[in-house]
Length: 599
Ligand code: NDP
Image 1 (tube, rainbow, N blue to C red):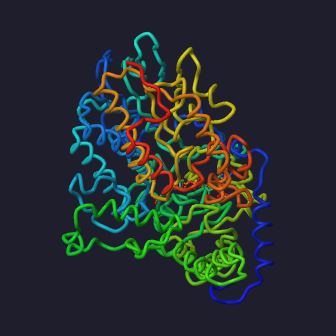
Image 2: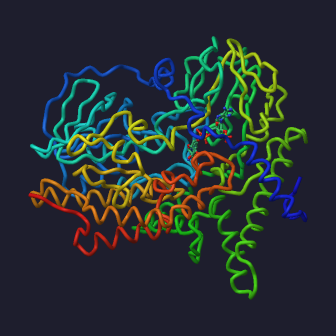
Image 3: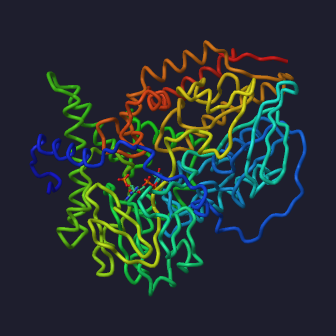
């Protein structure tokens, strides 16, 4: 126990962190998870479709195809519309726009980044979120509002999955084929597949044997649980429920399961850090006084603060900025003093913050033994921090039991329950809160292969490591753009990255379309140079997200951060602010450096 502000032994704490991490290291890394194919494919079925769409297959030519109708696709569509591109189609697997927020409707689903910086295009659309932290339902509604505002429903193909995508050199077109028999010939394609789009399941022995009900948090089965995203899961009153996983999704839905289920078992491998939420309604007076350009300023302020760059003021002023702000203040103080080891000071600041998090568990959980198990023993940012005021008190309910697996994970699943340390917990339902694929091959996560010039697939090209310019374009795959973090940048506020990427892509596509340029391709030397830049700073980027000495998780490639492929797929190590500046300068000089155009 290390309550905040009480003296502690840093060496003992370092050792404790190491022991906890070592317990969790596994040789199988990402292979510990089973892919949602074959018998597991049903875990990706869409439970939210009210009526299926029936339409004839399309066979047509289009200027731009955007794959994905989440924030990436919406922001891409918006920027293209602003740059005068009218002929575009968005292809989306779900039944509507929303992406992550279409799929993740579990009770309590909420964005833990402040809504005023997270929801994109607020000024353009003319919308002010209702609360500081929006719930999923509002975000889904707002996604649809963006779609209407930019006329993106015109040409949107919902409930449609891309199956094949290949470059036709003869026509200089991408042929995009779908599961509905569509064949689109596109001049340009933007891939907005999302970073956390493919649910993953744990490869627990016996996972296929369970005879009860089960689903993944991103496909919540309200038909089974009753209720809705606001809770009131009234069909669980006579059910014993297991939830496996205690990441950001579980933290938000456990309070609702705990409230409703006859019995809830929470199976924990690694505890999350759970900080104060403190949501509040938007102040209409504040909203009325916002000056034009406010959202961009606020996004940059937030990004600056969470990137460790002093900003003079903290506009967002929440758990994220407080967390980093405290560390920065310590850093600046240390820098001003002679002979101080700055890394040691930063480590102490991190210990202090985590002591505060651990002490909060003692404050909120009645049973000291349960409280001890809920305490995270790792550095802040080894795992994604979470913010919630109801999760920890849920363990005070007599009907809720924490089953801690001591870092080893669930031992086995049987026909009727979940086994840990030889004890079987019989349940009616298992909820998998086990997250999404991150470190697996791009084509596997996308769900289709991208075939470029001379029949080369993206998987082949990236087999030895990803190769792009700015993360967005890869030689041999002309007129194709990737909207993702790898070889681009990491920021806690993902839509901010998407804003910068889509602005950049739209700039290139708009230029090409208006000049009759038929192909845009990265020059080999430009791609090589960018890959070298990423590799040179790769571990720095991984370090910001956890690093090799952290507890395993998707932030550090499940403990395999030092693998060359992982380093090469890392975001730009100079940080998002520097990356955004690189893009802005690149656009500003008008040279389109590193790109080859053909007419
Ligand atoms: P995560 O990947 O964060 O969590 C998966 C959980 O499953 C972990 O607790 C993991 O344990 C556990 N797990 C995996 N395998 C086993 C096993 N064999 N036995 C027991 N437990 C196991 O998924 P989430 O869906 O929670 O979150 C994914 C991401 O989605 C977040 O990191 C965040 O980026 C985003 N998100 C954002 C929200 C927001 O507010 N903006 C809200 C919710 C999610 P271990 O930690 O040991 O690996």
